[in-house]
Amino acid sequence: MLHRPRRNRKSAVIRDMVQETHLSPSNLIFPLFIIEGQNQKTEISSMPGIYRYSIDNLLREVESCLKLGLKSFDLFPAVEESLKDKYATESYREGTLYLRAIEAVKKNFPEACVVTDVAMDPYSSDGHDGIVENGEILNDETLEILGKMALAHAQSGADIIAPSDMMDGRIGYIRRLLDDNGFTNVSLMSYTAKYASAFYGPFRDALGSAPKKGDKKTYQMNPANIREALIEAQLDAEEGADFLMVKPGLPYLDVVKLLHDNFDLPIAVYNVSGEYAMLKAAIANGWLGEQTIMETLMGFRRAGATAILTYHAKEVLEKGWLK
Image (cartoon, rainbow, N blue to C red; front, side, top):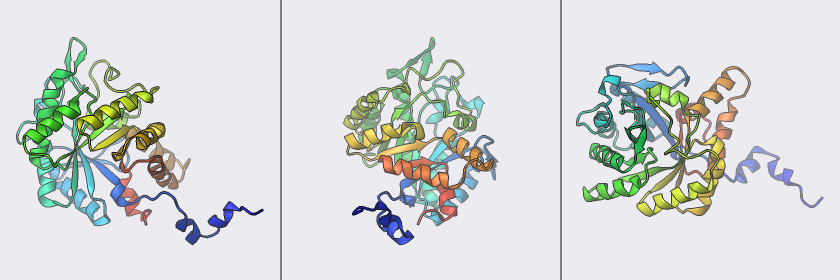
């Protein structure tokens, strides 16, 4: 035989030499949950090893991550039910938990990249990403609230704003608003293809953000569709997005590759809470080995993702799995 592919696998040195896909700490974004209080750190039961932090402990967690080489963080607030209302006014009120958290991280660690989430559901008494009227999610009326939220994030120091609501036109609306207010350097990471998935359960447990009535199928994408993602991506690119995101990750690697192959913008993927929970449960029960974590993350990179939002981010660095 003239061709023996195994010759390029015969030693670790050669395998490393010919490795096609690489993963580094710079590819990872670590989602972090925040709560009110002092010295609070509560584990999320459906996400072993993941916690809700009060701002003082959030700063300690960010510091420990930075020492490991993990520099990008996506913040999510667990808002008290009494502060929620129909129009999510807590999302942009001066001095709210979320804005204080952004300011604290950027003040103490200016080198950190802070990604912020723009959507009504953590602050909405209806638990939806838009204003609800007679059971309908209002699109255009919601944009004003999303814009106020995004502007408040930019004023608090956000580096990247990530609208996760899936309202039509929100990227263009937010981009214009930011630019008109002097925040031309604040990036937009659009949740471009966010599917109406069953993998979000543990995340909604963490924030208490599940819809009170109905579902999100009129604004999140049908899991059966892929070409629709091209429409969403084209619109987001034209409206000024700096990143295009696919969410969830594992069941949608084909969508990650599709966007990577058709757009020059960086592609992000969200390795969501349900994916994390099922893998950690299988490892805890001895059904799978820990190496499945790196195999999963490498799969996202191989499919074309530049940025990976993952709850595994700190763990893989603590265990020295990234060279």
